[in-house]
Length: 587
Image (cartoon, rainbow, N blue to C red; front, side, top):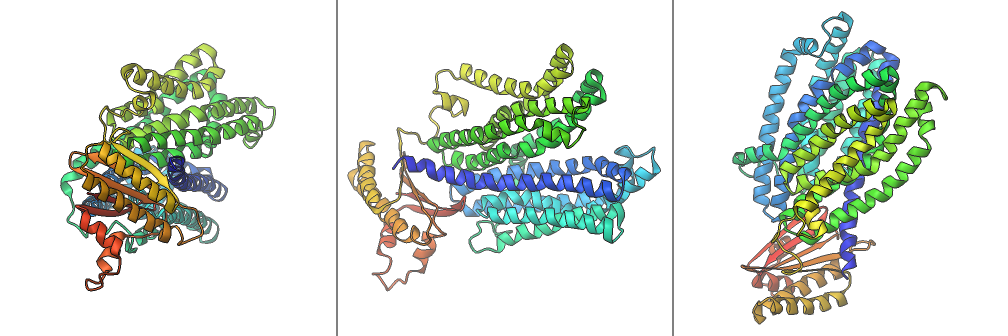
């Protein structure tokens, strides 16, 4: 029975990882096609103008990153405790801020477009200035959609509607690419048309995401509760690592590119450009798994589920190592073929590009491990370690490795710095944590789980079941477990019977609703206030509270088991998390 607990976590983890991988893949593919259309149809000046516009995207992303990370974390914590009112209070506050910031950014963008062109470096070239001005004016029409898309995507995913997010992302990519083609080759709309197509694609995708909230099953109901504006400082604090990440993205190339040019010249720089282009595709597996870990950690940490936290990270690391080992071997073997897409086979540029791509292959395993750890720490709200790890991974370790190895070994040292920098971050974190927390077991130390955290194997009982016979057997184990933890016999008996009735109903009704194989994850926790029961299953939507409310008062024979549970329990909360039914009962 216990092994099936891993299966449910693995199923949720893989399901959400696939969604994030699809999103990252669509985004990377769109960027490549975008560049090809513009360069072929409008020329190098237009392509350069779009490149110069990149800081405007990064600037808006500072706001979306902070809001999205903070809102997702706070909403996940509230969802973990089953507090829907708090969830919607937080959500409503987030929408107020998002819409307010959107109005300000659109106004300032259109008002200062010319000055932004000068700031971005187009002051000495009138043609470049004109192209950049037109592109910015076009894409600024999409700031509302851009803001909403990146703020709402994690919330809709948290709401269990990952399919909606995938559809919105794919539609955004299609509208963007088709719009670019029409603007350049059909409508002769030039760079303005390309920018407008980008903005339109985000506006359309944002509308698709907002359709999620009209679903009856959606936890999020916009402005159904008074906005909890007092939580905004906490939201900003949780989202601060996103600012650290964006700042590192801006500063690291400024520091590293000078070293690369000084040591290896344009040959090394061109090889690094190939590496950068290939990396966008290669890291999507590890980063998709890491995003899934971050999302699950936010819920499980709020539930104080130490066992499931450890299982989630272990499964994620195993999955990452298996998939990215295959990716590493393929990329290493095909490095020459990949380099041939950019340079003529056998030339010095091709040789350097092949070396850079092979070093990228070695980089994948360490990078995935580091990213999974960072996303876990962020989900667990270990903010200082997140800031330090982000600074080390994104800038400090890579910059120092590039300078030291480049000066020692020349161009080959520059390439070697790619995997070495990630290895230093991973080894440094593991050694520091194990030395600092040497009295804890390995996984508690690595995941920075404090002593006495929540419910552990001593004060909780966890198992997964899939048959009625297992439900009956588990109820007996629950009764014995409660009695062994000084819970009086009456409450122990009723706790066991409630769990048996609920789990049996899930198996008989929920498991048979479709042809898929399902599991019911059962957890019993003992705290000073009594016994807490939690059931989580991956069956189709079923809200026991809605079922109880629909029972006729005069029909005492209908729903006897539900009536019994509600009569015995102090509090019952239902919420749909990860597209699973989660029921928390306090006896």
